[in-house]
Image (cartoon, rainbow, N blue to C red):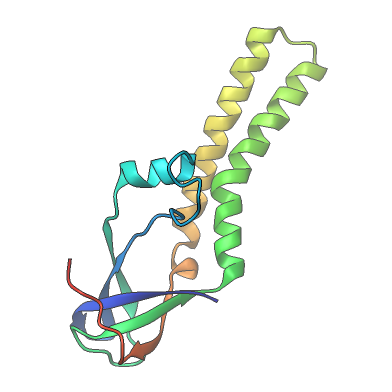
Length: 148
């Protein structure tokens, strides 16, 4: 289970609105100044994300909680978002090469397949979004999450 902290900002019957602070993937190692992931994280900034989740623990506004998502769901989502479009592009390039297409046609087929893979990953994300939502795991009594 991958876990992170969140703050309850509002409650409605059966649901809680939570706010999490999006943090960069890294920044703690010696190469953080020249790492591509670190640079992209700095450009995008740390923004809060709001989630509406079922409230099985009857948490109240202002409470700090821990939310989590199973690792296998996160890996499946990453596969769908990153690897599926890449595999579509690679498959189209190999197929076009085997069929004897010109370099331009191979490039075009690869780009079309990449776009189709990206579109498929977005449609797939919408279909299974509810199954990949985090869940509220527990209250955190000894950690205060400050307001932004």
